[in-house]
Amino acid sequence: MTQDSELRIAVIGAGPAGVYSSDIFLRQLAKLGDELGLGTTARIDLFEKLPVPFGLVRYGVAPDHPSIKFIASALEKTLDNPNIHLYCDVEFGKDVTLEDLLERYDAVLFATGAIKDKPLRIPGADLDGVYGAAKFVEWYDGYPTGVREWPLEAEEVAVIGGGNVAMDVARELMRNADDLKARTDIPDNVYEGIAQNKAKTLHLFIRRGVAQAKFSVQELREMEKLPGVQLIIDEDDFELDDDTIEEAGKDKLTRQMVEELFAIREMAEDMEDDGDVDFEGNPADRKYYVHFNSAPTEILGEDGKVVGIRVERTETGADGVMHRTGEFTDYPVQAVYHAIGYQPESVPGIAYDERGAHLANANGDGRITVDHETPDVRERLYATGWAKRGPVGLIGSTKSDALLIVTNMLEDLSAAKEHAQLAADRDPESIDRLLAERGIKPIDFAGWKRIDAYERAEGAKEGREHKKVIDPEQFRKLAHDIAD
Image (tube, rainbow, N blue to C red; front, side, top):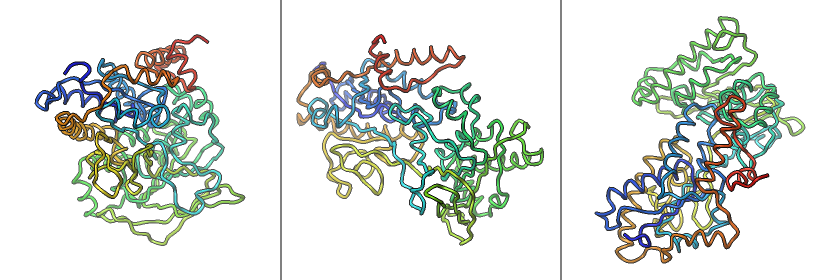
């Protein structure tokens, strides 16, 4: 293909799903393009509403995950590709429309992720002191439009959830501020907030049993090494029957997770036997209770504020089906955080599947449909990652997702080219002119590198690898090399 006829792809969202999909598209096109009559090169323009890329990796994962920097590094290498053009600080539906993109691109791929919490539907969920995990994560990750202060006055805290986000939230609530600062890129406002955190007791409530938890082994190992924190478990939660043990052993990841939980049980026993100490044998000034088979049924309040949480004991069979027992316990807490799942964003002009909590697409194959009830496909529109399948799966799941979507895209593009149905505007500079006319000044990859260099320099001043910038205007000044 000549330059004005090479494929043009727009990707909405520069998080892992969008970046992985861009990389896999270029790789698969180089491999299969000639066979499909598409040529072997394409221009991919990656649009991101935030001033910086990496989405979930930068703003959805706790800062003390050791794997973050490796994932971010891999994503950055992908973006440093002359066939991928980064357009940060450009919001789809506001700065550019679907019509703008379809006129200029042969396909549009939505990789928009999720930033909202699923609602907590129990009495008392609207009390002062009840927080969704998403907003708390935004705070401690320095999200550009997130809040800058967080109320951490409660001495007794509850976290609801049986997945990795719940573990992240609980761990950050139990963190020592100096320890967190030394090993992560948290900004000053987060350090100062956690340094003032009054939480001394935390209860993590998981509705199902030990063998049905959704934690990763990495999350569990990070929980084990919290300075000044004593882990406390209920021995009864670990009385697993033979059928449950057999069922858990069928899946490698589940088996590893259960084995790690049993190691934590032994660790908790040692912490108690040694005089209520942390993992290093030092006196613990915070207590972290892990409750399995515990379903919160009501948040208790007085004068509009949280004063406790009512929890029902459950039983979980080997098949994962949960049964309620009618046995209730009240725990005094002054704050409740719920991490029961995210809800992917809707997108202007694209149908949304409310039940599945994702963009409407045909049989999960990533082809956008007219609505969620019919399989009628809208040409040249696709979804990947959480936008396609809902908020399930880890970051690595987006790679297998991307391969499926890219395969479908190439198949469709081959047919579209054959029938002369590709985008009409083939000028690669057309999108730049359009944005300039609208007064939009995108942050490109070079701009991101300037931001990153500044963050590393600021971190180095404190003996840290990196220190996050959080102010949108500062991002723009750094990216566009504007002096104060």
